[in-house]
Length: 155
Length: 182
Image (cartoon, rainbow over all chains, first blue to last red; front, side, top):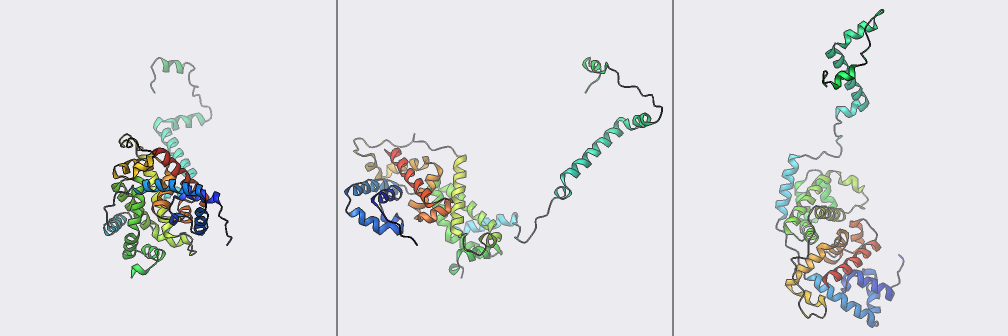
């Protein structure tokens, strides 16, 4: 373990960070820091200043907690019974959609929509006619969009 | 006896469903957990909530504790628990309204140094408010090192930063407090 050298600059840093009480200083540097302080008036003044801030900080007593350990443990275990935690050796079940794969599901869904639309609109019958040799089904009229604008055809 | 067992052993037993081991962990660490939360949040009610939330996470984490630790002893239970508490407090403060100094009493007249008048009880509120205004990480470093007596190494492990970064936070926290209180 390397021994760090404590300098007056380091003592200044220690006081600035940890305050005036040597009990709060890094243990490995405490003895050396105290030795330097004894002979340094400027550092002693810094220590005095830190002591005043420490006294102010010590005046802040936090509100006391009101729960007791037994109550806390009991409530947690009741809550845990209602939402059990998986054991480390259990594999959580994988939802079917993740196992099956999104692309496959999306493809199936699209096929279903298309099939439904074809059946609902009777398009399948028209398609069969169109595909048949010699079909004479006319192309949609060019003025169809105007019909939409005139309100004759609704969305 | 559960009181003789280490935190890691109690955690392992709790992970296997040993409720008395879990109870022993709570008994051992709840006071400090609530003290940290109370100083971070300056509220007993909120500190109690944080305490319960922290130990709920402890219970949920227990089954996997050994795998986190890997048997190396590197993941000390208290380091992990204190980190959970600090993060819960920081999250809660992010959601809460910031403290203001409006309700703080005025400094006593004629005081040669503002800090000299702050040892009295009525000024504790001003200190509480000043601590509450610190950025979260500065407040966490101050609570862990100054109030809870953690070493700089222990605080660095909780906050997941270097010792020099912790010291920097402490220096800035104390500087900011001096400005606020002056």
